[in-house]
Length: 361
Image (cartoon, rainbow, N blue to C red):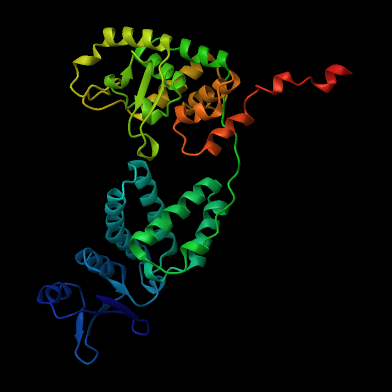
C-alpha cells in the first residue's frame, strides 16, 4: 500500500492492488472516498483517521511517499515502523545468536531512533544518524560508549532489515573515553563480605570476587559447575557464548559446603546454585546488585562502586600478586588481551617500588 499527501486539500491518498477485504476496511474510515479518475482512496489527514488506518493495516507493508513530518501524526507512523520492523529485526538477531541483553539494547536503540527522526526508514541518510548521535551526546548527555552502542545497533539493523547502501561504512564513531575500572583494596573486599550475615548472600559476593565473575555469571551458576576435585568453576555460555574455567577458592569451597547443607539447594530440580523466589529460576542480577549495595552500606564503603568492582578487584589483586596477564585474561574470559591490560593502570604492583621524590628532600 502506498500513501501520499494532497496537502492542498489535506487528504491522505492510498493506492493498493484490488482487494475486497482492504476495500471494506477503507469504507469504515470516516469520510473515505474512492477517486475513480486518480485510482486511489482518500480520507482526511487527521489524527483519528490516521490512527484507525494504521491500526487496521499494522501488519501490512506501507510505503509513505510523502514526508512523514507532513502527516498529522508522525509519531503514529513511527510507532507503526517500530511494530512492523522491530519484530523482524528481533527474530534475525535471535537466529544469529545474539545474547538477550544485546537484543534488548539493539531494539531499544532503534526504537528511540525511529521515534526521533520521524522519517521513512528507507530514506534515512547518514546525516540523520549523525544528528541523532549528537542529540544523544549533547542534548541527553549520554556517554560516548552509549552513543557507540547505538551506532552498532543501527548498523546491524541496516544490515539485517533496511539494507541501505553507503551509510554503515561512513558513520562517525565518537572517541571512547578511557575510564579506569573502580577497584576495591583487599581490606575493603573483606569488610564488604564480612558485613553480610545471610550465608547465601555472602557466598554470592565471595564467588563473584574469588572467581572474578560477572553478575550474570554468578547468578546462573549450577551445582554441577563446581568442580571441587580440580578446584575449578565451569562458566557456561558467558559473554559471547564462550565457556571457560576459573578458580575455586578453598575458603569459598568451605562456605559453599555449609551453604548447600543449610539451604538444601540440591533438592530443587533446576539445580541452580542460587535459586530465586521461583525455585525453578535463578536469582536475578538485580537482586545480586542490591545485596552488594547493602553490604557496602553496612561496611561503611562510600566509593561509587557496583558488584562488577569485585571482578575488577580480583583481576587487579592477581596482577599485584605477580600472576601473568595471559592467565588473568583466560580466567576473566576476555577475548582480547587489550581488555585485560586495563588493570595494569590501576595496579600498584610497580608504583609501590617507586620512591617519592618528596621523601628524598
